[in-house]
Length: 389
Image (cartoon, rainbow, N blue to C red; front, side, top):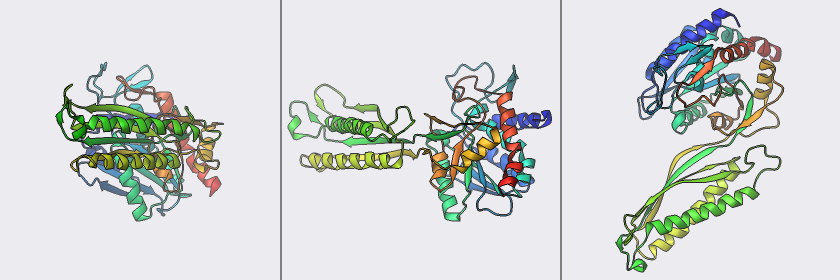
């Protein structure tokens, strides 16, 4: 890659790092900056404000058609820096020893900066197939922006054919990861004296019965592992994260809260877990009501982000293999927004600069070598798309 393009990428990344887009804060300033760059390049740009306000997604297109083509996707939010021991201001990019330090350098503003620094070559590529951009909010807290964006794309019939999600993979091609679905269950019982447990509904006791069934389902998932699954472990998992409830030895607990997650290898397993736990919940409620009609169980969905299922035929994987020269692909344990785009019918891969080992840590960085490799990949798009047109 030419030094001039890498320098341009660094300048843009420095601007992006300065936008303090921690998930608790607005991303408007960064979104409007990106919208300006895209508009100047001739893209059709939609800024989609979140239903709650204060945040936004971008969907933009270079090219005449908004159907088909390639989507380049990244999230604009970053994780907090509090209680981390940074060597410098995390929102002021620092270059040292061929590395760029700052919150979001690898996760994942580096990829977004590379896309913006490559708008000229991407515009050339768009004469063969449209090039789309999806930049979202709140990926770090449940892929909230991507859920909204995908629904908007479905309603507006915006249907790219291929997608590259630029999460930090050290520029390896990733064709699969598990989903991540998180739930909070609140058990409401009736309090009373510990000497008469038979006349009250002990919320903690019912929560433990729910957990018992969760652990049984977790074991059942091992037997459902897809043949040849390359995930580690190869089956869907369930984790009981936290259980809170009760107040004293001699008081019947009227409240309990359970937090749990499942990481499914496919939608069939997610549906299985949800069906089994819904049946468990209904059975427990019936038993609670036999003692008191005031008792109840409430399930809150914190987030349901599907995994990226490996596919035998994947044009996005083949395209990125051509662009990077890579001869293989991998699976990763961390989650991304890729499964949401796959759900729209796209062929999707995850591939971006930087290592996930640096993400979310103090002194997060991306190397200049990784950015250069990403810029090279994007620079090869016009020729690759021309060959397939």
